[in-house]
Image (cartoon, rainbow, N blue to C red; front, side, top):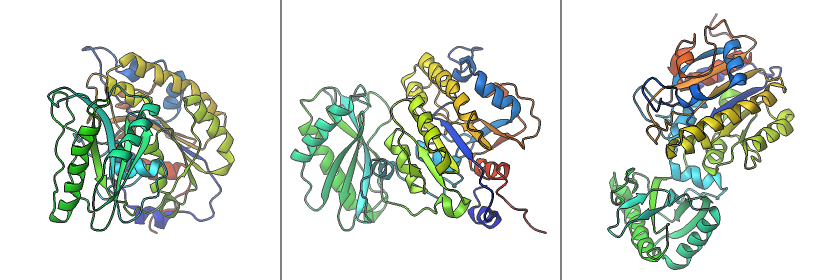
Length: 404
């Protein structure tokens, strides 16, 4: 639905504080590796999530629309209740904000991947073997010292692993630019093209950057080239405090997701390096906020790597931590993914995402487990992801009646 003005008008002021938790298991939806076999979620042993599914309400959600494969930015926005077709956030901005880079109105931000190309210039690894962050820092320093862009100030900042943020600062920089990632192996990196006249200068600057990087990194291995994604400027999005009446916090280890959370008004909390660390923070900060977004990343990473068993293991590890969540006595728990990332496809996909909603006010539901097959039987049905937030608020007794 994503009618923010309607939701805002129904908020109950001075409500008795209820605690809402969104546990987002990134890319949780999957597919069977073999015909007739289980998905990753069906193969995983998840007694704690299954219990919540039995007690709660289950279904499937579409992050953007049926048949549309979403990126992480729009799919997260939808789960948080914002129409992803109206509120657009480029990947570049998400990466930059996620590392606390002080973006200004003059800035154009890009998400960068260090990648590997062969002697013909064809991409053979879009993530350069997932190089360690320490190597990323060395390469970013190399680019800062040897790449020069007349007409714009340039910042090259490490994000994590193979990811970096590129920020150009200057007058007249504009959005409306294509990406250079061909999204396939054996293809050349694409040139940046302007999709509107005012972005022509920005396209020239980015193509100049890429041409210089190609020379600077020529002797490096495996990271001998870069791919640029999501060239964008800072958008204006109404904060969750204003439209949902929440005091929200985010527990996410990857910078991009911290950036997204900050842009919608969440306080970014320390996430550590493990799933257990994230639940430690949840326990420590429980009394300070009434909404928590807790993000599990590596299920998505293993799906993109085609590692079915590793994704299963991460789902099981997350399930074990759910016991800790429930001892805090939350009022509403939403468990889902931002999108599906089947190991079979090694990429995000268009498949609807399993979702469960648990509270003391859920009606009876025939589901007996948290997975694709069971959730397809759930009373929640198949809904837009944007419906999850108002349903959670209603279960938290935070919305008044509409009309007389």
